[in-house]
Amino acid sequence: RACWRGIPKCMRPSIWKLLLGYIPKNLTRRVTTLNRKRDEYFDLMERYYNQTNKEHRSDQENKIVHQIGLDVPRTSPELKLFQIDCIKCLLSRALYIWSLRHTATGYVQGINDLITPFVYIFLDEYLQEHYNGMSLENFNISRQIIADKLTEKDLLNIEADSYWCLDYLIEGLQLNYVDKQPGITLMMNELENIIKKINI
Image (cartoon, rainbow, N blue to C red; front, side, top):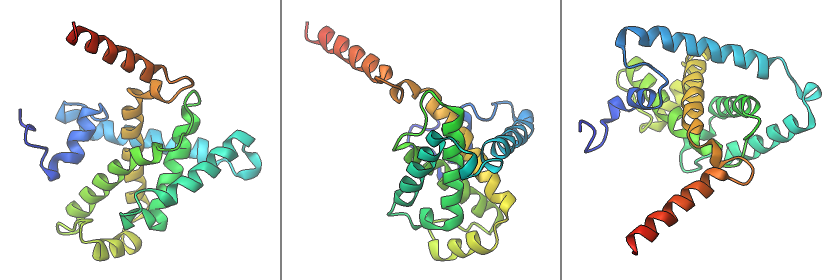
């Protein structure tokens, strides 16, 4: 009921994390959980990204890197935020790690569009909390802050939060992305059954 007319902008980052199950409802456990999940992501980053280079990747992994490399520059072209180099790097790394951890699905075109809302709202939240209410809506100023003042750790925390929210989001959609797309077939069968019941 509280969100019937939409979630207030200032609450969206927390609500997404709660609804997706990334952070617990229990307030006393949130900071600990958030730090643990971020550390988990940094471990994944070390294992799947930092320890490999082109020569050590399989042909399939290099194909994934290539496809992500094509998709990331095309991500939300109307938003200049996603054309900033550090943000493109953040997206590329998170998508690559996600694809290696989900080999049944792997990376498919369009997953880049699923992570962008999380990057946007978590980055906007960080700017508002740490830079006197600065918002991504004021892009010229926020771009300078992102490029010059955000530390690597700040960006990595935003990346980790975005990664885990993508992970939890796709967990419920994964059957739509695997071979023969059984999730979509199931939804179509359910829709067909509903239509049959209505048309009786």
